[in-house]
Image 1 (spheres, one colour):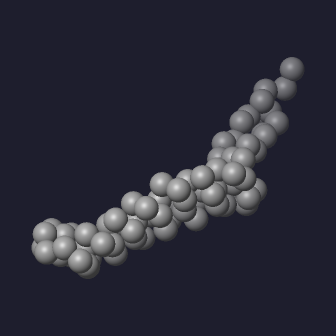
Image 2 (image 1 turned 90 degrees about the horizontal axis):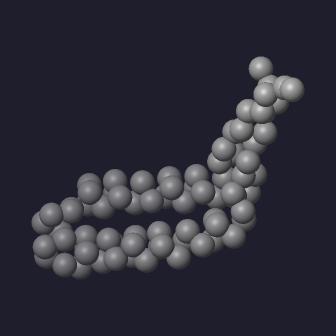
Length: 79
């Protein structure tokens, strides 16, 4: 068994991903609460699931970027 090395994401990734997650979440919230078709198709339960998934992705990326949770674990064999 070799040496394990933990690799983390760069810190800017945590904020860069929010440029995508936040607008998608805002659009989903608008569709779920302010359009008739969105209320019928997505509903509050669907909106809640989408919100929880996006929040989980955001938290995961923040933890990987700030060194709390490794993005990769590389195992190097002994020579």
